[in-house]
Length: 346
Image (tube, rainbow, N blue to C red; front, side, top):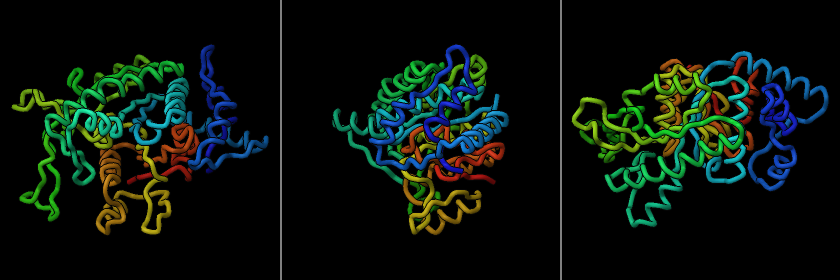
């Protein structure tokens, strides 16, 4: 399945139309395509293809209407202004199509900029940011503040409804300390990551109450210790991929999408692997095809699938309207466009 064109995006919005339905501007989308150097393989706009696309979109909407989709938002999709605008438009459109959308966002570049500004050093171990108290203070300020509110207000300005939260609000994300694996992979060789949290409890009641009210929760991955435990008052920094995967699993979401800055999971020849099973993922990590920051994405994608999520998508967030493409281009099977990333299933 190819990626949708701007005219097909208009069709998706039309199918969701109410008196205030959002419809992306063809002229604005066209100008973005001309300026962008990112992948933009598009449908042609002949009558036959347009009708085929309409059937595909209708099948996708029929199979997903009323179901929950969790999106991990970050990378170029967040830091490039044009792509950030299109992301918010996509969320608003999916809401109007009857889907229940949860956004979990990162903000690494913004955290890095603020850490440099205030003179706090940080480093990474196994794709995780080592988080001293000083680092967590900065991360919480950046993620729960400007970044979170920019996303929620952007969705609202695009015609949707959104509410910004952190994982500390109403004990949304309760954590225990996460230890990193040492080079030997043994418990005795584990790495102290500081106040990095592993999500143990998700307040799904709060999320579902917001979704039932037609509101998209926009969640900053800053958590707290588990209620009643000695570390209850500790503020934890949570990897956004970790948080999104666990939230999707606890909600038994139909889909979880991880937006990234590459085409998806690549093999050692840098070719896209369009679909993988959980066993495939384990083997690719073992032979070091998958390394670094991709490991948390695929690990928590597989965890989410094992918890009951129907499909996890490692999605190329550099593609305009990446969400609409991957959610609506799969038809009833729901396996995405086939060109916009990697789908992980059991």
